[in-house]
Amino acid sequence: MVREILIYPDKRLKLVSKEIISFDTELHTLLDDMYDTMVAKNGVGLAGIQIGIDKRVLIINIPIGDDEDAIQPKDNTLEVINPIFLEKNGSTIYQEGCLSVPTIFEDVKRAKHIKLEYQDRFGEKHIIEDDEFLAIALQHEIEHLEGHLFIENLSFTKRKKFEKEWKKLGNKR
Ligand code: CO
Image 1 (cartoon, rainbow, N blue to C red):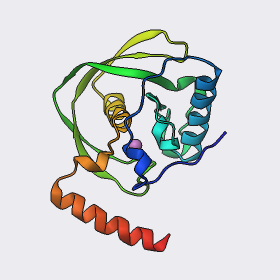
Image 2 (cartoon, rainbow, N blue to C red):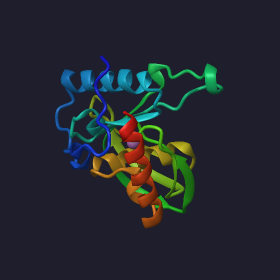
Image 3 (tube, protein in one colour):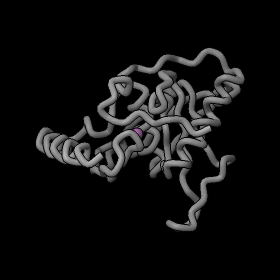
Image 4 (cartoon, rainbow, N blue to C red):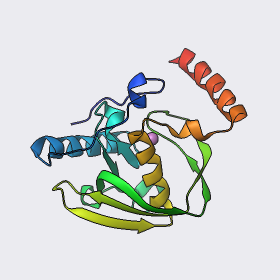
């Protein structure tokens, strides 16, 4: 089921998400709904708080194939619960966007390489390591779990510019 996405500056996006303890059908429904919502909005990642659920859960589904023909099969979804960084090093810059800040794309500096421990929907622990796009996406989504958005990483001047632009866009909505 597609759920409503919270849009900046919705205050709920500032909540620090809580650890997941029960790996039950409620969690599985949440994960399934997150997938439906993300795909409906053409996103590559979504955190629970973006649909108003302040739990430490996020999904990522990197499209396979070229732009218009790209597909996001459900079984290619990475479901990450209670993530903990084990390693973070190097740096890289990538132009990011976010379903909670639609139409805005800005360069953000992140760690290049990450190693992460997390649980899957059944509570099983896994370790994942990456130094490409997945590493960037994971850092973006985990930031949501801490109550932060990618635009908070912008310089003072760029942030001011964004707020001005966002206000203008809001007037059209
Ligand atoms: Co986001």
